[in-house]
Length: 175
Image 1 (cartoon, rainbow, N blue to C red):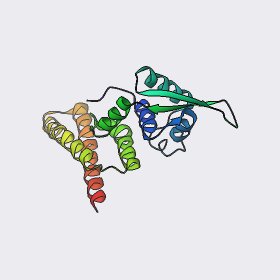
Image 2 (cartoon, rainbow, N blue to C red):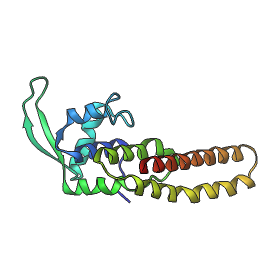
Image 3 (cartoon, one colour):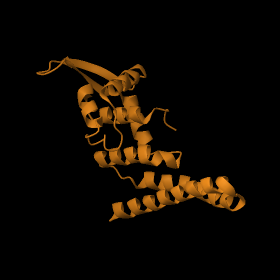
Image 4 (cartoon, rainbow, N blue to C red):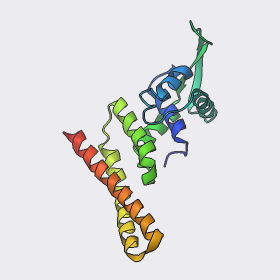
């Protein structure tokens, strides 16, 4: 499994892995109205913090300092070979929990689409990971009462909804 980073750090690393850029451009893309910000937004200070963390981890390296017509000079950044490999691996790993589908899985699907890569292997792996979860919840549901049953029913219905979503996306992407 890929190194554990917060979704925002993965988003920053994935953006920087696409092409050399600079922090301001990454922050704009991850802003609430940016293409990636629609799925996962990150404030400018958090983008720069993530970049610093990724540089410290050896996944991103700083390049030239470029003059700017407006604002401060901009330092270019690019992903290292290790950083690019980590992103490629991360993009194909299913998320561990149903609660992470809205954030991490959608982020991965967005980046796969931006790269023109096939999402089918990720969708299949995600389905395969969640099917046993659904089966276990179905068994647990029968043995419980009260709020415990209600909670399991919520988790089961959420898991079923994600499985239906995965099937629909996989079906639509084949057409």
